[in-house]
Length: 166
Image (tube, rainbow, N blue to C red; front, side, top):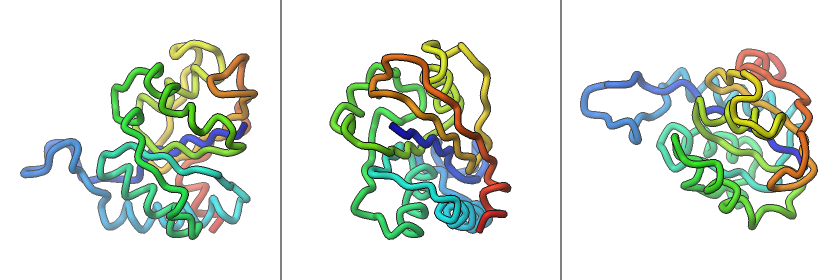
């Protein structure tokens, strides 16, 4: 199974007056960069059977952009288990309906996505240190969900590199 972990694009700053953490949207620049990065993903040959996103506004907007570029709005679903700070056990349960998929893209937040990557690669959330930049994408191959062995890191790309592939 191919797992793509996508961090949300550049959002308005933490603590912006009148905007809660859950409501922080992408900035206009973040939106433009994310669209170019999504086009780069498509040109790179990244594909997915399901596009699953955190319900927080910035992640949902990121997923909406990807779905739009791919013409895949029908494959987009919110997954509350991708909220920041959710337990990985909740995520495994939430992913169970997708265990037959060949390719999943998960849109979420740091440090959760890096910890998930570490878990997929080593079996431990602290087994390796990765950092996904905003709009960055990580590709990991695993044998099953939940993983029954160690996954393989295929690549980790920044938004800037993805935009160059546009």
